[in-house]
Image (cartoon, rainbow, N blue to C red; front, top):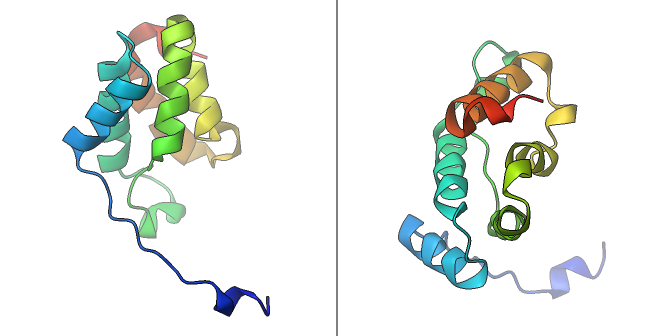
Amino acid sequence: AELLPLFGWVTVPRLASEERAALLAARCPSPELPQVLRLSSRLRSSVPKGSEESAGHAGWNLSLRQLLRLGRRAAQHPSSLASDVRRVALAGFMPVAVRAAFEDILRQELGESAGG
């Protein structure tokens, strides 16, 4: 804790959607990449309803690192995308109402294969 003030902080600006898509396409080309990006955008813009925890919730943000992992995994195993998203988002630790909203978004974006 005493060493922390000795380090300089660097603020990294968020990538625009186009920049993020280009970076992901270059690092992990996959036919499922548009689906991963669409799901990420939908999760980011959604706010879970019906729970007290959602008062300050700004949506589910998947980091660039998480998106890279999902993109690589989707390229190798496209059928496991829904379970991979659940694992990355730690869906097992979400409150019931928040998890239900999360599952609804997965079902809408990934279709019937999102059941799990």
